[in-house]
Image 1 (spheres, one colour):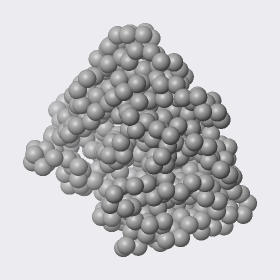
Image 2: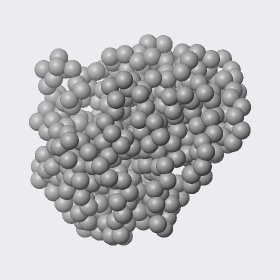
Image 3: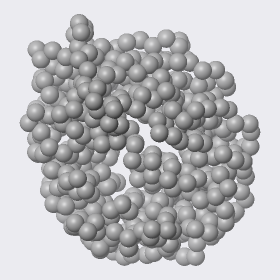
Amino acid sequence: MTSRDGGLGVFGAALVALSLVACGSHTPANPDGGGDAGGGVDSDTPAACAEAGPVDDSGNAPSPVGTQLQAGAALSVRGVTSDGYLIYSDDNALTLHALALAGGQPQDLGALGAKFWINVVGDVVFSWSNVTDQGVGALGVWSAKTGLHAISSASVGIDATASGDRILYTDHVDANGTGDVYLANVDGSAAVKLLSGMYVDPCFPQMGFAGTTAVVSFCPAAPPQSGAPNATVSSFASPAFARVDLVTNAINYWSTDGTHVLASLANGIVVAPIGGGNPMTLDANGFLGTFGDNGQAVFYSTHSNAFRRSPPTTPAPVTLVPSAFGGVWSFSPDQKWVLFFSNFGATGYDAYLASAATPSPVTTLWPTATGAVLGAAFTADSSHALFVTNIDPCVSSGTLHAFAVGGGDTVLGHGVFADWAIGGARVLFSDAYAITGGLRFGRADIELVDLAQSPTPTKLVSRADAVFGLSPAADQLIYSWSVRSAEAGIYVMPVK
């Protein structure tokens, strides 16, 4: 299943909710390296928090655990590719590097500048260097197969994706907030301009693939002040990649099952053949949605704040949540459950659990708007929903809960910055988070719990840098450690 909404997988009953999630998204796997390099406080942090400054939490931390991959006092994990390469930055030299988890010498992926963005998609690494305050930088693309290539001198940060040996990205973004969309091979060759002069800021093109067909939603003009939908969703089929407009005057969001595209108009939610043709209205009251259940269903919200599902080929809406539905955090891996929010406030969201299969009573997980999903929303076996409550707006961490779908709440940790579902009912998370300044965000203990065995976590590493990664098989933890310079560097250890 492929869905597009800026990479968040969230849709709601109001665009303002969607926008708020996007602006405040917490992405521990592929973080923004371009925060305040001195204080580690991003632009969304309240002024009162910035006054507190970083915390020295080094204390008498035990030595790091595992095998050191690379020594260095200013190294940050930025992601791990699907073919087993660690992507990390040197935050003193402001350079990017790749290192095979299997061993070998690091590869230089170029200079980053004072503000940068890194995004790892499969086996492809996108890096935007010298990013401006408008979010535009020079785009470089690297993979182990093709090496490093300069792709664009003016591309919107994070707005790019890859599939197989092809990439989609923005180029020629100017001071007026307009730019072009290109498709190319991963090495930048055979570039094809798909769209010209799109209004990029703030209507970032939503780009993705359905097999070899590219799909893009974009705004051909500045969004109207009225907030009326004005995006166009188009497909570009291989090999000619000729443009076919599927819907117009749509919300800048789409989802696909590979043969159809789901889009939202002012007068309902529609399904359109990916090669072109008349869109079918699935629900005139539908608002935002996504394909799910292996393409057998469409899940969507409504203008009346309900949540429904329907077969994608023949409209037959079933209301799963009748009211007070705000937006989806995530579906469980088995597609039987949906974790959603109803309200949002200055410091977070509330949380509710409902069946994604049949109408049933909604379970309240957290009734006040002070929570968030800071990583995985469910365990891999779908047995527990994961949600962080009592978010501290100054440090973006809180109390991690594991809610059994059959009932029962377990508190896993406090001061949790991020969590990962790594197979079965196992959850890896960073606990006791503290801001330390610089580009590594802070430090935290890394802990592991297997909810199928015991609710008590085991501490794996003390005071690691807060952003860490996992090997493609999720059986190795990769983290940086910087408490003492003599032992500082990036380490790898098995996760069992």
